[in-house]
Image (tube, rainbow, N blue to C red):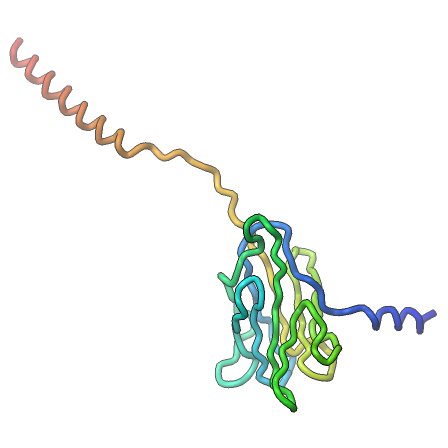
Length: 180
């Protein structure tokens, strides 16, 4: 029985679609690299065109806790958007790009996507062989758009008209007072 349970758990894919059920702005937070030695690039593939957001090592590595804002919307044209994150890693034999929504070209899972209680997603990427999914660790959240209440603005033109009418009225009142 335990062997069967292990086999079932082992066949479950770690990658998954990432989407939100409300309008808002995407915010990605880099959590760290879990000790990975490669200079992995990470970024967003959808809904924007493929955009590199940072690196885990190298000359200018991202600092854990760095937030990337203005990277896309959770909904576009009132349609749910599938968000796809990626890493590009330079292991032996050339670089490989792995996505959060699919197995790698080697047939293995390279992303672990977990929906959090607050509605955000934790995404852990595996760059090579240790299968710890901590080589690039990210969270992705959708910050809801503020529900604005339309507040009518006081018409600016009516202030000018009231001033002119008031001045004319004051002038007429002064003239009439002098005549009497």
